[in-house]
Structure formats: structure tokens, C-alpha cells
Image (cartoon, rainbow, N blue to C red; front, top):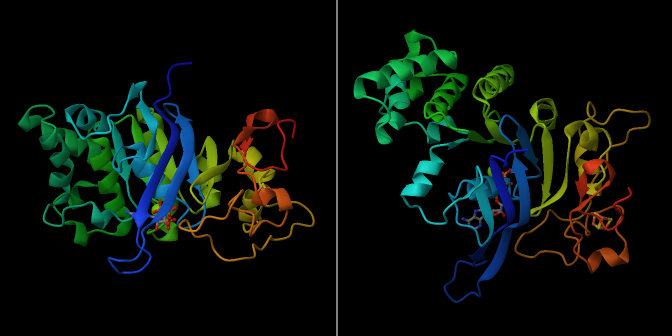
Length: 326
Ligand SMILES: Nc1ncnc2c1ncn2[C@@H]1O[C@H](COP(=O)(O)OP(=O)(O)OP(=O)(O)O)[C@@H](O)[C@H]1O
Ligand code: SF4
Ligand SMILES: [Mg+2]
């Protein structure tokens, strides 16, 4: 098999933070992401899920070199991604585009739709000036925005239309990788399915690798080839969605899945309610970070950090109760 499109190894991002707004307060370490590794092949989608603050967006930004890593390596198409924003990084970044939750934060409110899509071509001086508008028109058609909208400004569009402009802007440079950070969560439910279908069509046509972050586990199950579950900055389970959602191995994944009745099918299904305080990445519990909330925790779970190990069938999980023969 060829080198993965994106491969990240042992990524970490720690921040120094002052808990109180005082110059004299002692700064503490916030471990936003620790020891995260994964690979994405061309044409495939890795889903990243987990509760708010677990490190999904930080992982996305680290993967593109938008946030410098405290530790770890990133390879794009087999080549190490430079830690510095030099000319090579900018060239590689052209092939790795990001789609955010809020289209208005990305679009320039002073530019009409067509110019928004021409702009990346201008920035990277792609093609002759005269050809750029033609390419942008072609891209706008591809994302399903009809000509009547091309002279409008972002505030004159619906949320779904704006996200289509963002997709056109991202794809006009013919990237190989798309990192989508909750691309549908700000959209009306009726529009979400349209944008997901569009993303899937575009992925097929352009053979895009995708990192897809979402709180919507049903969508993740539908579109992802693999899913990674994060808890307090670490991947605690990773596998094919059909395995992971129908038979979650890690107690945290079990709780996540149990909250979605249509995913957690089967007789006698009961929702697992997690007890204890929401996690705090500044004050990490010892051993397995999930132990204060884990219904299956034992005394040993306070001592040892469980490694992410491969179980039978190729799934990975980080829990001391699981062994490679599980
Ligand atoms: N620049 C920063 N400085 C300090 N802490 C940060 C910074 N950026 C993120 N964090 C912290 O890192 C942790 C992970 O944040 P991140 O945005 O990656 O979470 P997330 O999983 O994307 O959450 P959400 O689902 O709410 O978007 C959080 O505790 C957050 O407060
Ligand atoms: S290691 Fe212990 S606390 Fe952590 S998930 Fe497994 S059983 Fe729960
Ligand atoms: Mg986020």
C-alpha cells in the first residue's frame, strides 16, 4: 500500500496557562492533546469524536501545522510537514484545506461569492488571471451554487449556501486532504444532509482524504471509514464504525454510544450515565484519565496509563481491562 496521505505520530500539544488572572499566579500545564497517532489514506475518511474540550480541534490544527506541536511528527504524502511556516509549508498547505463550523468566520464579508472563490487562485498565482474566474465558476457549479448567487455577499446567503462557498474556496486549489471541523453543526437539520451528500460526492470525485470532526455520531457512522474516540486529549478507541458502534470496547465509547438509541440497538439497551465531574485537562486524574467516571474502574486504573493496544479484529482501545485477545 502507498504511504498514507496524512500520518501523525505521537502528537502532543501542551499549553502553559494561569488559572487566575494574576501575573503572580503559578502557571500550570494544560494537556490539550497527548500521544495521538493516526493515518488517513486518499479517498478515506477518519472521524474524530468525543465530548467538548477533549482536543478534537487542537488535533485538527496540529495536523495541518496551524498550531505548533509540543511533540510528535506529521507526514503529508510521506514528506515531513515543516514545523516552520516557510515556503514549503505553504506549498504543502495548499493541498490540505480546512472547513470550519462557522462559514462567516472564514469568508470575507466585503467580497461577493465569485471573488471569494477566485481569491485562493490569486494568492497562489494559479493559472492566468483570465482563466481564474472560469475555474471559479466551474467550482461553484460543482458545489451546487447557481449563477444567481455569484454576485451576492456572504450575509445575503443562507447558512447552507455559505458552507457551499467555503467548500468551493477549499477545493479550488485541488487539495488532497480536507479537514472538516464540525462542518454541519451550525446548519439547519434539513440542510445538514444536503451538505453531507455534497461532501461525499466531492470526496469521491477528487479522491480526497478527510478528517471529519463531529458530535453527530449517526453522521460519523454513515460517512467514515474509521473512527477515533478521544477522551481528555488521548485516543481511547479506534476502529471501523460498524464494529465500534455496534460493539464498543472502551467503557467511554460504550457510554457515548448508549446515549444514541438508534446506534445502541439490541434488547435490554440501557443508557450509561457517567458520574463525576466533567474532566479538566489542567488537573488530569492519575493513571487512566477516565477512572473517576468509569463504571468499570478498579484500583489499578488509578496507577497505570493504559496504552492504546490492538485488539483482535484490528480495533484499538486503551483500557486495562482489555487484552489483545479481546
Ligand atoms: N490556545 C489555547 N490556550 C490554552 N488552552 C487551549 C487553547 N486552545 C485550546 N485549549 C484547550 O485545549 C482543550 C482542547 O480544546 P479543543 O478546542 O481542541 O477541544 P474540542 O474537542 O475541539 O472541543 P469542542 O467540541 O467544544 O469544539 C480545551 O481544554 C481548551 O480549553
Ligand atoms: S482502564 Fe480502568 S478506568 Fe480506564 S477505561 Fe479501563 S476500566 Fe475504566
Ligand atoms: Mg472543537
